[in-house]
Structure formats: structure tokens, C-alpha cells
Amino acid sequence: MSIKPDLVLDTASPGYSRRLLENLASLWTDASFCDVTLLIGKKKFQAHRNILAAASPFFKAMFLSGMEEQSRSEIELHEMSSDIFNTLITFMYTGFVKVDVDTCQDLLAMADMLGVDDVVDICSHFLIENISPFNCIGIFAFADAHNLLSMKRQAELYLEKNFVQAAKGDEFTQLELPLVLGILGSERLHIETESQVLEAAVDWILHDLPTRRKYLLQLLNQVRINLVSHKHLFQIIDACNDHGVKITLTKYASKADGAKTLNAHGLYIPVASINTATWPRHNAKKYIYVTGGFARNKTTFVSNISTLDSVERYDVFAQKWQTFNGMQQARSSHGLAVLDRKIIVAGGEDASLISDFVECFDPDENFWTPMPSMIQPRYGLGLVSLNGYLYAIGGYVGSEIGGSVEKYDPVERIWLEVDKMPNPRFSMATVEYEGLIYVVGGLSEHYTESDAVESYNPITREWCPLARLKYPRAYHGLVASDGYLYAVGGFNEYKGSLSSVEKYSIKENKWTSVSSMGISRAGSGVAMVDGKIYVFGGRSQDVEMAGTNGFCASVTLDSVECYDPQKDVWTNLPRMAFERCETVAIVL
Image 1 (cartoon, rainbow, N blue to C red):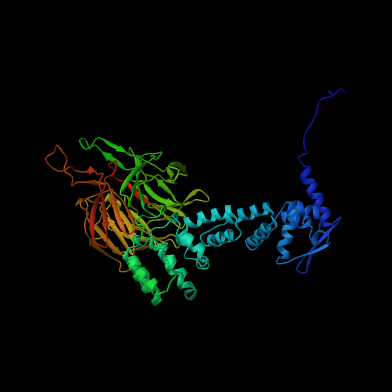
Image 2: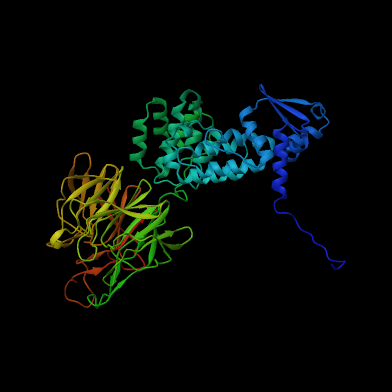
């Protein structure tokens, strides 16, 4: 056989590393060639110094330090669990580790101390994969205590995203002051109102009042007090059971003067200044997204109708509009909901074609992606997000009024029909409030406007009839806040487009009228932010057309109004970039 003399093969056996590790594990199991015994509690572990040193910087330093452990055949290790160490030393010899909920944090802590980075990474990944609003604060505090920066950052992001739910758990009240200050002061908290931050601060103080009373002003300084409404502030004050905290909160509401009085008494440690910021946190709910709809040409409004795919975002604090990438499919009378901080659009109509198409918008990426389609095409449906699921309710399904309820499971990525409506209808309004879905008005059989109102419990699948609307209506908006529902505008066969607004007391099961909008609107987008109702576009019979002698039958609008329930007053806001009707708005 002839081989070139300069030919060289430089390679590796793919199974050598594994076989070597298996052989080392076999030697360890048989206690062959072991040269050191580790004593942890009452349990002894025989091992090989070179394996321990190769797997752990802790042991490498111990055996090379010149200290007495270098020459001793038996070494006692203190403040370690023998069970946890058994798991860790097994990994050193085999590369395999069993991680469970009960032992993960203890295993991670020991692996971090001994410098076994692979186990640290495995445990960190396990904790983050199983993070929830109920344990995220504990994981965040654990990562901070062990200086696990990557895990701490991931837990912190999750905590900020789920702050409202997480702050109600026991883990939040167990946190030390520095971490609480950092969380409450974060610009990235996902909150609906600043009062939720104030409530969390007060809860933390009251959990251990004798010890924590002195920190009250420090915590209050993380709250943007100017953004807390007097209503919410005094609700928190009334719910507080400590007279001293009540007085402090009342004085703090008067900002700097109150703080000086408190400091003069020496009751609290000095605070440099009161947080007088008037701008909401970056991730506070201050944006309203208005999607799709249709527009009529003002001169040939009957024949020229264009369905829109455009998306606009309104900043309620800056009172400015911003345009985003349009939907993949133009649509009107569609469903709109938020699931996992993303906007979901389902169904709708374009050029008389009813859609089952569902797509998802990530505002951070400004990008739309398709999702699994609904079982039935539908327009004029209600789409509600509740307990991590989507519910598509009613709507027109092509040849008839749909009465089915579909549920979307984001884990399985599948739609399932789960129930039937007692009164099938479309172009009704839906909203979720405190675990129930409310369905109000709409077009029922014979395509007449309905005054029917029901609540639906998705868990018990129970429909409950409620007090009827004062005026039957369809193509209206519906929002919920502070124990009330608000049905806004809409259309009625006898009155045309409506400017009226009805308020429903959930406690009293009663509808009452409140101030009407400045202009009648049907098919407008309606949303609520920080207790105020915002109404976008729609179609109206109240607008006089240029070049006509009367009023147009129905004109699409670009105007915006805002309602303050505390003052019972409507005000006008900056117009949208596009006229749009049968549009939908949502807060994120």
C-alpha cells in the first residue's frame, strides 16, 4: 500500500469525550483511585482531586493554595447540603443533572459558590422557563443576592411587565428596601395608572409598619404623585388602617409643603425632593391604537368606499398621533384584543368578503405576523382577552347571524368552539371586566337593533341576562371602569347615528344617561385610559357637507372626543390622519 509521506490526518473521535467521562464515572462509582474524601454533614464523598479541580474553580484553588487542605486526605465542608452536593458531584462526573422546583435554587446557589457554571446556566434557564407573576419577585431577589446578572435582568424584565399582578403577592412585601426602591422607581413598569405604584408602596410599608414606617417618604418619592388622581389617592387613603400613614399620604398630596412639615417633626429620614414628574412611565398605558375601518369619499360617499389597513397610535399625554405599519389584510368591523402585550386582530370585512384571518401586531417591532384562523369567518364580532385566552363572540358569519363562541389557546395555537350565545347577534359591543365578558346591544334577528345585555362567565359557561339598555343600539362602543360600563354612540333605526351615552352600574344593575357626545357617531373606535373615554372617528348624520344644501346621510369622521366621567364633560382632541368608520381602538 502506497501512502504519500507528507499526508497528515488531524481529527478527533466523536465518541471519545463521552466514553472518557463514562469511564471516569465508573471509577468514581467503584471508588477506584480516589485520593480525597469530602465530609459534608454526616455523609462522606470519595472523589479524585484532579476531577474536582477540573470541574470547579473552588476546588482548584483549594488544592493549589498551599493550605492544609492540599495535603489532607479528608476535608470537611461546612454549610452545605449533602443531598445538593450529591447532585452536583454527580454532574461533575457524568455531565447529567436533575433539576426540580424544590431543589433548583439551592442547587444553583451551591453551583455558583463552587463555580460550576454549566449547572448555574441550567438552573437559571429552568427558573426563567418556569417564571410567573407569582414567583418572579423571588427569582429576581435570588438572582440579585447571588449576583447572577443575566438571570436578574430577565427576571426584572418579566417583573416589570407583570408588575400589577406580582406586587399583590407575598413575595413583594418580603423584599428589602433597596430592591423595592429600584422596582417602584423603574421607568419600564407596565401599569394602567400611577395609583397602582402608590398602592404597592403603601402595601409594602403596612406589611411591617413598626420597622418600615421611617421609609415611607423614600417610597413615596418613587411615585409620580401628580399622575395619581385625587379619586384613586383618597381610595388608597380610606383603605389604609393606620392613622399616621393616612396623615402622611394626605399631606404628601400637597407635595413639597407637606414634606417639609413632616421632616420638621423628624418622623422620617430626609428626602431630597418630592417626585413632581408629570410624564407617565415609558410602559404605562398611555397609547391607544386605532385600526382599520372604512372611509367614504365626501363627494361620492355612496359609491366610493375604501377599506383601510392603516394603524394609528394616539399618545393621550402628548396628544399626538403616530402612524404604524398597516395590517396584512384591510378590514372593517373586525375584532381587536391584547394578548401577551401584542395586538390581535380577527375577522372583519373587505369588499363584502367576510374574513376568518387573524394577525398579530408587535408595537415594539412595528411588525405584523399571521396567526391561526378562526373556525368561522365573521365580522361585527366581539373579541375579548381573558385569563390568557381569546374569545371570539357572535358576529355575522356569511349567511346568518353567528351565535357561537370560539376560544383561542395560545399554547396549543388552536381555536375551539366552546359555547353558544343565548341571543345571537352581530355589531354588538363587548368588554371584559373583573373576570366576566359583557355583551351589549347589537343587531339581532330581522337585523333590528337590540337592547339586550348579558354577562358571560367563561369558566362556568353561564350567561346572565342584565338590565336592558335605555335605547336599542348597534355599532357602538363599550368600556368598563370603577364598577360601571359605558355604552357610547352607535346606530338606531329610528334615530340614526347616536350621540347619546349610557352608564351601567354593575352593583345596581341599572342604566342611566350621561352627557352626550358633541356629534353623533356610529362605528367609532372607543377606548378608556386612566378613567377617561376616548372616541375615534365613526360615521355621522350630523355633518354638513360642503357644496350641499342639507345634511349628508352618513359621513365618515376623523374627529376625536374625550369624556371625563368625573366632570361629565366631553372635549375635542386632535384629529386622526385618516377618516375611518367601523374601526376598533384598543389600549396598550
